[in-house]
Structure formats: structure tokens, C-alpha cells
Amino acid sequence: MKFTFIPIMLMALSLLCGCRLPAPVAQAPEIRGVVIDKTKRTPIGGVLAYYKEYPRYGIRTDSNGQFLLREIKRWEMVSISKNLPDTSGTLVLESQRHETRELEIKGKGGWPEEITIELDKSE
Image: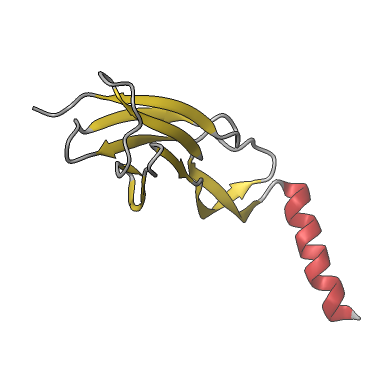
């Protein structure tokens, strides 16, 4: 009985004191979008979309130019009493036939961003 009481008491104390506990914290927001050709106004498939800060999480647009980058989280020590900051990141779009583009993205507290991005043909 003593051994089960101690962990519960320690957790209660840490919550009351506003101590820091490990929790998953969003590093980059979820974003969904469509990539289109600026001149033709048609969707562009095969465009690589990723966060500059997390390039290994990149995906390609489908044949309709659509993509969905999931929220990227990391475990951090956070204070229970403070609100978590909004997320942000630099979205990079790379295509062989179109310009490479970088956009600053700000998250809205867990709601996915939805954007349409126009790319010019590369010269």
C-alpha cells in the first residue's frame, strides 16, 4: 500500500507546484494545401513539400496538386500552468519544372492551415 501511495503523492505535488512534466509539444503545424501553376491555373502533381526545419518529413503532391503535412511533435519538459506556444515553420516547395518556393507558416493552436500556392515555371 505504501508503494502505490508514493507515486500518486509525487504526481499530485508536481501538479500543484507547477513543475515541469514531459509532454508532446507541436514543433510545426499541420498544413494542407493545393499547389497550382500560376499561369495555367492547373494543379501540379509531384511537388515535394516539407518543412525546412524537418526535411525528412517531406511528401509529394498528388495528381490534383494536394498535399497534407502532419503536425510534427517532440517530447519536451513543459510547465502545466503555461499555455503552449503556437507553432510555426518554413514550408518549402520544390519542383523540377517550377520555381522553388519558401513560405512562413504560423499554426493556429492545433487547427490545420489550408492554403493554395501558385508556382511559376522555372526558366
